[in-house]
Length: 110
Image (cartoon, rainbow, N blue to C red; front, side):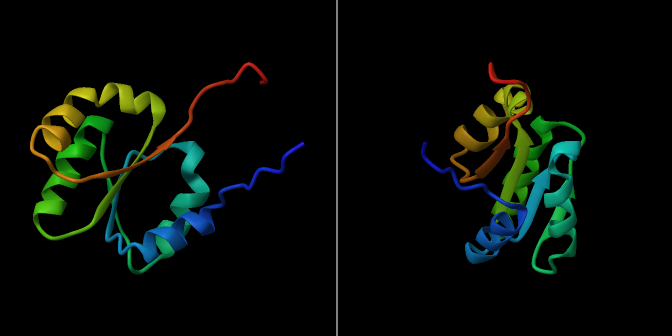
């Protein structure tokens, strides 16, 4: 059996800092609570909550044009909801964006 490394919230925060991320545009959810607590306590990160995933792309685009280095944090189901915004803002305008997409759902293993 192969050991799999777990990605902890502390590792995620360290990587965001290492790459100079300034803003996390995200839709709050219960699955990212531990990560949220660390992001909130990190002085180099500004949290920008949105009301739906599609808004994350236009918000991140504006931040990027303004010189910030945002990351979008959403769930996989929200990625499907935001398809038009992804196409229109990120792809259509060639605005670079990094997505952290969490998994929401069940696998066949439970």
